[in-house]
Every structure is written in structure tokens, then in C-alpha cells.
Length: 425
Ligand SMILES: [Zn+2]
Image (cartoon, rainbow, N blue to C red; front, side, top):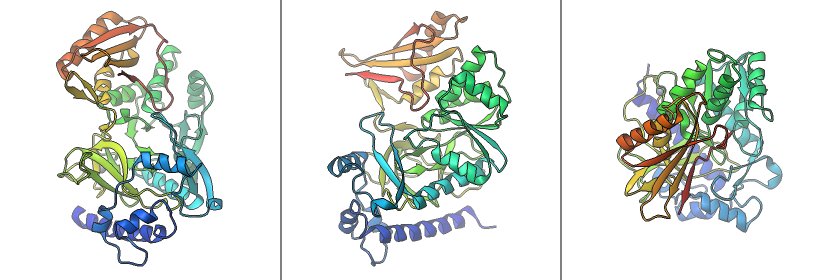
């Protein structure tokens, strides 16, 4: 058996070969990347140099949006004539205009192959019944997981466009074993089951969550796993990148990157230089098989930390410790104290009485204030819980928060990309 070190060497050789082929395909054909590649000395027919590749200017979402604005509707990051493309998806546009993304049949199949690997790693197999309580729309979301599971031989249940109670009945009637949704929705569905007195514990074996960081936030994980009596697996991906990570059976709360399909770098978000091993940094991604609309050294905005010791599962793939730890653009500063929304979620989700919450950061006053509204299970002592939450935030996150009780059902519920933090500035 080969050691992890040898396996990593083999992996790096395969990555270099794939990068070289990718550059060869794009150098003359893709008008978005051609000038960038030429500037870095990466030319068609020339020997590939990984050092030159690392000098390539990272790509930002703003540049892609500007490119689509200048060359509407799809921009210039297209390697083939438009007639080769068979799918259109777009980003959720939570923070601005949505980004449109086209795929060829080959690029699409590459994404399905990424999911096939993920299913293999988490033990989903032919014959399993998969439940997708998700409204399939232009957002890439679970489309690729759904189709990949079908190719694997799973029974796939599309459960969009119905109430949460109807979804629960569908899940039970069809004896689904695996559910794929956002962490917020897994929580919400469990709360609905409790309200409707529908027993769900032990019904599912696995829950795969994506779209929000909750799957790797310890308190949120525990909440979902105990409500459902199922093992949770976190996953992350981006519409413009593809399905990228999986959580192995042996190491909950970490994400392995599918490195045969993605070349990743972790860099200092200010200098864009590689950081020390294990340092917190921004994830730069190059996808190796989405040739029709690729991204090279893409700035994901995700802050991550690579594990420095080998994983118990034996995988040579890099493991992001604690999953996606935050975003470069969502750090909140209050009275000189910085924190990520995920830290706050980790406190709030420890209180199983809290059904939903909303946070407002008021920067209009000279001293920024944090206001938190919580919705509690009706028969609980909400005021007392609010007081306990304020105390934990003060003791663990070191700032004062004004925690108020909101009427049951008054705060917004989310099926995808929850927006719970609002900043007035
Ligand atoms: Zn592992």
C-alpha cells in the first residue's frame, strides 16, 4: 500500500497534467482567459509551468459580472461557440446582480461525476431513496446532485413547490433514507414535524446539507442530527465553480476538496500570497473539468484553514478544518471586535427553544450595536432564554447584544441562502 505522501505526489502529477491540458484548450479559444494567460506567459504549445500558473492574476466575481455587463448576456468566458451549450444556471444574487453561467453537456457531466465521487465517499449507493425538499430553479443548487444520483441508480424524489407538512408526508410515504437541503431547511422541517406531531427521529439515515455554512457549525449540526436521528454530511459548492467538497465518514466537521477535479490554493486575502500551512486564508479555486466555462484561480471569498495532519479516512485530499469558516465579506465589526456570523449562529443554535432569529447591526450610532430578535417555541419562557443568550454572547464573543423576543411566525423562513444578518450603516 502506498503512503499518503506518495498518493499526494501522484495526485499533484495528475493535477499538473490536467492544468496543462486546460490551458492548452483555453489559450486561443476562450476570449476571457486568453489575454490573462498570455500575460502570465502561458501560451498554446509551450511547456506548462506551475510557477507561471501561480502568477496568473486571480479572477474575481466583480470581473465576471462586469464582463457579462459589457458583453451581454453571457460575457466572454466561453470556450466554444454558443450552440455547444445546453444548460444555463445563475447565482442566487444574494449580494447584487446574479451571474449567469452556461455549461456544455461535457462540463455538466463532469459536475455529475464530482457528485458521483461525493456519494461514494458518504456511502450513498444504488437503490437508495433520496429526498430533495428544494424548489428547483435557475440556481444550480441540487440539480447536479439530483441527476448524478439518478445516474448512480438512486430513486430521486423532487419535493419542490409544496408546503413543509406536505413534504414531510412525502418523505415518510416514500421511505426516503437520504435528504439533501440547506441546513436551515433541515431545521425548519424538523420544527414543522414537531408542531404537526409527525415523528421523524430515525426515519432518515443521512442528511446532506449545502448552500450555507451551518453544516460545519457545531451547534447547528448537533441540533439537526439530534432532531432527525441521522448523520449529517456537510458539502460546499458554487454555481460558477461546481460541487467541490465532501465530508468523510471518519472526520465530521471538515470538508475534503475533490482535488482530482479542483486545484485549490489558500492565500492571504490582502496580499494574495500563499500562507503558512494551516493558516486561515481565502480559497482560490481552479476547476479542471468545466472546460466550456472554466474558472482559473477564482477568488471564492471563502475563508478556510487546511488541516495539517493526515485524515483518519486515509484520503490524500486536502481537508478544510471546520468547513468554510467565514466569508471575506461578511465579517462584522462591533466596537473594535470582529466576528463572523457563524460564531453567533453557533451560540444561538445551542438553544433548541429558538426557532428562528434575525440580527441587526446598527452602525448609525457612533458605537455599533447588535440587536438580535429570537422566536421561541410557544410554551417556553422566552424572556428568560433571551437573557441567557445575551449572557453567553457577552461571555464568549465579548460584546453586548440586545436580545429581544419576536412573535412566533413573525421572522422570515428560508429554503435557500438564509439572510439573517442586516447591517445598517
Ligand atoms: Zn477524511
